[in-house]
Image 1 (cartoon, rainbow, N blue to C red):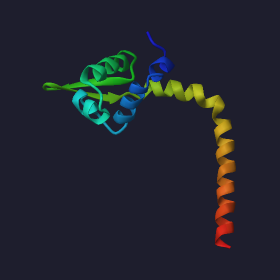
Image 2 (image 1 turned 180 degrees about the horizontal axis):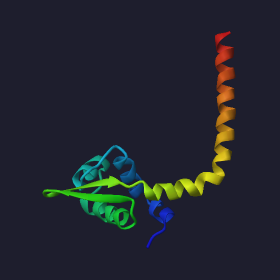
Image 3 (image 1 turned 45 degrees about the vertical axis):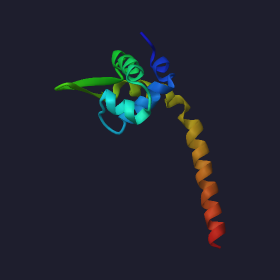
Length: 106
């Protein structure tokens, strides 16, 4: 069984996840949107399904893939101790941009 971070280490799987953020998609939808072959999409969807990142909803002949939130919570929890680094930098960037805007308006 792959770890959450091993699953996310694949660029193709990250692209599939990004596409599924827009809503449920079929294999053919993903194939067309990402420009990769159906066997490659299916292979990565199987990994995402087996590791709990996506669920499959059969509808007639089609299978719709959609994201599940639970694995992303694990990533969120892992990142929590590091948020201070980004928040501080983003706060400084915000102050810098505000100062730039004030200078340009003067």
